[in-house]
Length: 453
Image (cartoon, rainbow, N blue to C red; front, side, top):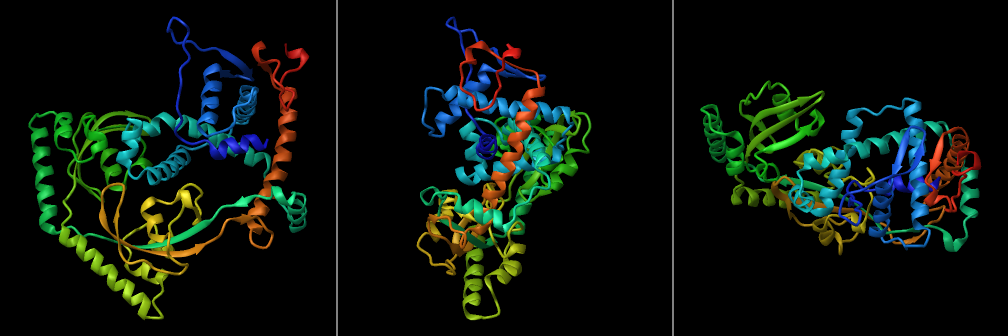
């Protein structure tokens, strides 16, 4: 059962899909297993197999059997979740999609780069993987239900730790905790007025009959959607910033909104279609320009904050973040940057943004950087101070230094045993058929029994 948890924790949002072709070039696929009311396709197996290759796993002779068993586990869980009416809300799915997208955007550098890499808009990426993420959340919810109330005592943690050979103890990578104070460049009123005049002119042209999509291609500064005539694809309210969402969801027919101001700039929006709690809209975005003088002022603001922290004992970095930082997501938690991959403040080195790593790499714990240039994925510019709060050295896990982590390992092991028993019980009462091409696989669980053939 550890295998399933590994899949759910490491399966990334984006994976390379492949299509199977016959010798004459016609796309083919087939059912290779059935569990309850759900089927596993050959393409499902090949996609997951390809993922293992891409993640650097050693390819063994029975690798496809190994992958198939993981799919059997996963399908058994989704089938049972359906029988048990396990529900996941749209809001939960959107939240998880957003979390994963933030992680990948941080890794690749910007939304624009992510869209260019996958040749899809952010909305299209989310739409494509919404069902996959929903299925994963349903499985996680069922696993949580199965192990509900399971606890681990300190004695069990200690016993678990001492049961692991010393050379097999987990190697804990170096982890870093970083905080920031951000100063964005202010936008002068005259530059806002220029942007407002431009978006007003575009709206008037549309009202007089010009094509919204054409003007979006020519003028919109949302580069991801501009090339598609401003179209975002189907989105939910939680996908959008509040001001944009409020205006977009009020639209009817092919109505064009009034001018909407958000943190990104000025928008006009046109409704394309509506399906349930989702809408498809197109928009034009005009961003007020950033003045080099204002960027310099942002730097000077942080230079003063840096000096004040160093010279005033009562002004801690945490307090300064609360008082002076322009970043809404970190200012109220001491400036601490949260790792979107784990929702914790700890980052492994390879998880850090390059722009952060190159600043803090040579810093000592407790040291504060000078102001360094900062640009958000949506293009806002400014400067930020970085504080290296903590750094651990790579080491073998110990009870003293890594108790919480070992406690989680021990709890996971205990939960796995409970889920393993649940799996074995469900196999015995669930309709399961596996294609004869895979009946020679040496599975760890009795998926194939004589009466099912």
